[in-house]
Length: 223
Image (cartoon, rainbow, N blue to C red; front, side, top):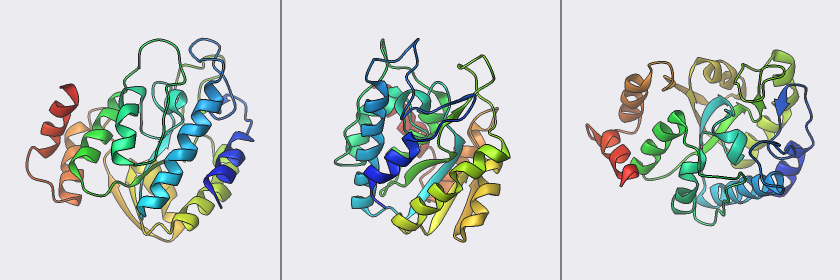
């Protein structure tokens, strides 16, 4: 498995009511070369993660319409693209959409933790695409069991290639899915729907961060 081969395999997927950011172009927000930009974003990100020697995945559920749909990167919105190269040296990212960068609340919480820890994990999702409601591409929905079956082989290949030893599941959906890989799984509350405090507390305990470290990291992002 190589980053190029992995991204090429992702780009080959085509599912109903699912936006594939590595192959599809949004007629409303995307630049003409958006899919190519997102493939490059992910390819260089995976290469950088492998060179760092990541052995942990932070695993969310799927790409959201304000975040990964636009960037091609899990748990990462456009607002945080400039930080990628600092946390993952060698990663080259580019905004694939027109207009100002769009921020996402979950990404803000994820990146606050990334600023506070020494070795970054790989950010990934159970379902690496953006599932949406029929006829409404700018909504989020849960993937179906049939859709999830389509990506099982690729997720297994990714975990095997990087020799992942631990998955930090962001939310119960991710935790349930992650059990199948035979590695240690730690579940952290997802920060959405009122879960910010529990998410921060869980990450603080997991990484033994000082009290208020994540609040300070959020403030740094605003400077």
